Amino acid sequence: MTAGAPPLATIVMYHVVRASSNGLLGRLKGLDLPAFRQQLAYIRAHYTPVGLFDLVAAADGTHTLPPRPIVLSFDDGYAGHHEVVFPLLADAGVPAVFFPVASALIDRSVVDVNKVQCILAASDRVDRVIEIIEAAIEREQPRLPLPAEYRAQWWNPSRWDPAEVVYVKRLLQHALPDRVRRPLVDDLFRTLVSADEKGVAAELYMDARQVIDLHRAGMTIGAHGDRHLRLAALSRDDQAVEIDGALRVLDIVGAPRRRFAYCYANGEHNDDSVDLLRARDCSIGLTTRPELARIAPATLLTLPRIDTNDLPVRADAEPNDWTRRASDP
Image (spheres, rainbow, N blue to C red):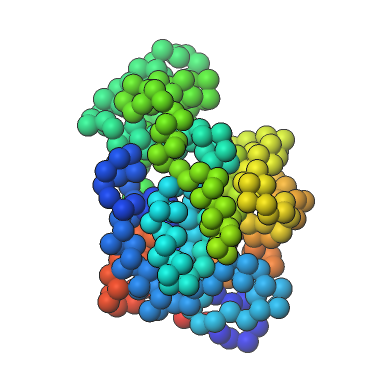
C-alpha cells in the first residue's frame, strides 16, 4: 500500500446458501453446500478473513488490517445461514456478519423480494406472469403508463438475470405504485406459492434462537431494514421508520442500538439515509455496488461489496481479477 492511501478490503455478499435443492430454499437462486465449502477454502487460501468492525477500527487508525482482508456478509437471514454456513465458519474460525430482515425474523413475514423470487421459481412460464402483471397495468389506464413504457424502462438484463426476469422483479418489487403492486404480489404469491405466509417464513428464515446462537458465538449481527424497503424510494420520515424498525434485530440479540452495522436493502440509499444512520450512531453501512472497499472515515457508511458469484467456487482455482486487485496499493 502506498503511503497515505486508505487500506483496501474485500467485502463479499451472500444470500441463499443451502444444503440441498429440496424445499423452498432449493427453488431460489443461491449457492449450494459443496460450492460454498469450496469457495470458503479459496477465500482462506488467498485472503485473510476479518470481522466487519475491524474495518471500523482500521478507519480510525486503531487497527492495522492484514494482507488481503476480506469480510463475509450474509443478507436477509435465511435458514441456511445457521444450518449450513455457521458450522463451516465456526470450524474454520472465520468471522462473518449476518443481516436478518426484522419483519422476517420477528413478525414471520415473507419480504417482497422473496415473494417475487418464489413466484418466479414456482412458475414454469415467466411470460404468463408478465401477462398477469400487464393485465393489471391495463386495468389501471390511464392512471399508469402503458405496458410498453414499462418495458422500455425495465426490460433490460442484469449481471445475473435475463431481461424478462429483471422486468418482473423490478415491476413487482418497486416500479409499480404500491396500491397496484402489493395486492398483485400477494395474489400471485397465494396462487403460485402458498396461502400460509408464516409457514413459508418459518421455512425460509432463521428464527430468533438461531440468530442469538450466531451472536453468542461471536458473529456480528447487523440491521437490514424492517421490511426490506428501498430507502431511496422513501421520504425521510419513512426512511426513519424503516431504519428504526430494523434495529429490532439488535434488541433480539441484546446488542445496543449504537455503533451498529447497517446493510441497505438492495443497496439503495441517499443522503437522507446516511444522515439518519449517522444520527443514530451507526458505525458502518454496506451497499451492493460491486467494487473493492477503500476504508476511510468518509466511506464507512457507503462501502461497496462484491457478490459471491464474483469469486471462484473451486478451492484450487487461480486468483481471479478481484483477488489480484485486492493486493493493489
